[in-house]
Every structure is written in C-alpha cells, then in structure tokens.
Length: 189
Image 1 (cartoon, rainbow, N blue to C red):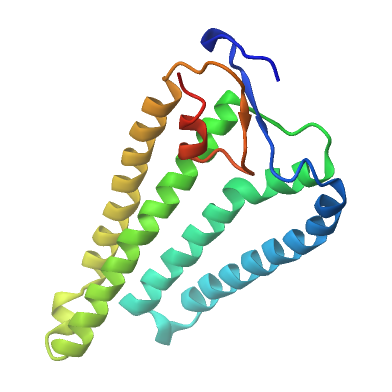
Image 2 (image 1 turned 45 degrees about the vertical axis):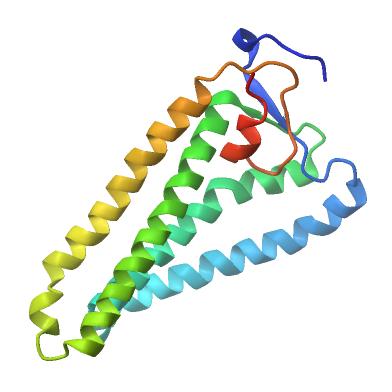
C-alpha cells in the first residue's frame, strides 16, 4: 500500500488472515456456524423470556437485554468478516468503519453497565428479599437499562467522532478483522 494524504482516505483495508487463503476458506464455515448458533441462542433467550409469563422478572429482563446486545455486537462485524473471508477485496468504507467502531464500543460499554446492574439486582434479591419487589420495580428496570443503552451510545458516538476526525497519514491497512478503535488510532498521524 502506498501512503495517502489525510484528505484522500475513503476506505480502509482490513488485513485479517489475508496472508493465509487456505485458512480463510477453512474459517468461513466455522465462523458461519458459530454466528448462526449465537443468533439462534440469543433469539431463543429473548423469545422465551418474553413469551413465558413466569419469567417476567428483573433478572430475565436484563438477560433479554444482554441477548439483544449480543445480537447487535456480533452482527456489527461478523457478516462483513464472513464476506472478507471469501473475497479477495478486503476493504471497508470510511463511514462503514466509523459505524462498526461505534457499534463495537457502544455494545461493549453497555454490556459492562448491564452486568453491573444485574449484579445490583441480585444483591437486592439476596440481601433485601422482603423489600426487593419495591426496590426493583419494572419502571426502575426500564430506566436502568435505557440509561445504560443511551449513555453508552452517546459516549461511543463521541469517541468515534473524535477518532475519525484525526488526520490519517501513511498506509490505510488495518491489521485486524474489524475497525477497532485502537487499530484505527495506529493509522493516525
């Protein structure tokens, strides 16, 4: 790759396993199967927790949120990775890279907050069982989950905008499968 001026960057090249074409063909069915199992498992968790009335509790509400989050996280980068495993052209547009980076940052941060909220929920259920229904109401569950999603998305949008506004000089090759923020920051001047 030849170095480019920061004003010319319209796409990035994702290296991945490009040096090992035989390995790419082997990884495609394996990654496809794992992606399908992940999607079906998470859709199953969401469906069961919504359809079964006995599971309409805070714990299963947050578990459903984690499943939706996992679907979003894997769907942000696995489909493009699968295309790149079969394709000779392994590029991603500037906007696509920014979107992938933002979704990855957002879902990762939201997962951390949701796990902390779930720990607090379990703490209340074990340590304050008599007051638990009052302390952890359906409304509070929705507010906590919604706040986690919104705060992490706004934080991730801010980080992505800052990272993508940096001047990119030199090569446009990302030595990774996805547009992760640290890999992209290495390309900045």
